[in-house]
Length: 275
Image (tube, rainbow, N blue to C red):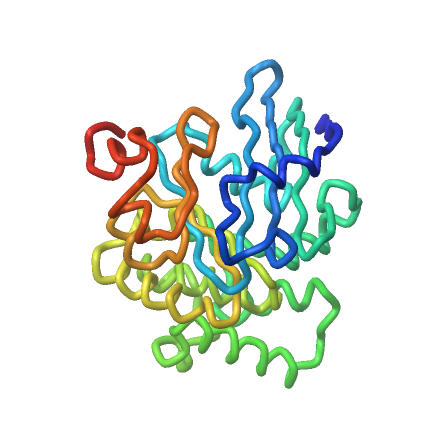
């Protein structure tokens, strides 16, 4: 692994696409400034700058290969796992530059992630949800029981699995598995939850349940979600960023992005002219 992090530039705040008239950068949960990312010689992100507000759902949209998943992975430093990645610019979470901190484990506890396909461990439902807390040193059975129940309730699946906690999580339906993955993330008590197309492998009914869950979860978490589904972004997000060729073309209230975008490329994408 050979990840290089280069210098930052806070001056870009002045021209940041994400600054709304009624919001200032210092209120942002996540503040991204002048972010460039390279895979070897190939540049994947160009001068990405935006502020993500606390306890909102922010959707990242754009055609395949536009950089939205790459950007999502910068928020918990998952790109560190790829050889030859070079990153310049700045990402702050709660005013702390995450690329100047060496405690990646702490970061990934604070910033949970749910992937495109459910990635449960081959163990019981209980042990899947309790896995993270146990790794943090929590061994008390009563405390673990409380964490597991609260997390499964938070993921709106407790009533469906409470009588089968000792059975394999892999025996659940795809939608149930994804909600257990969300419960596993919640069990770590994160501040931010990243979701990379979390419903793309699910049927419409399971998708609706996960969308309802996301809408309810924003009371407690800052959520950033990558989605190819325009209707989904419109339904569940407060703000939307449109990525194209590694750049943020437009970032605004979701209602504005879909009803009165400022950039013609955004309008062409959300109306289905390309993508």
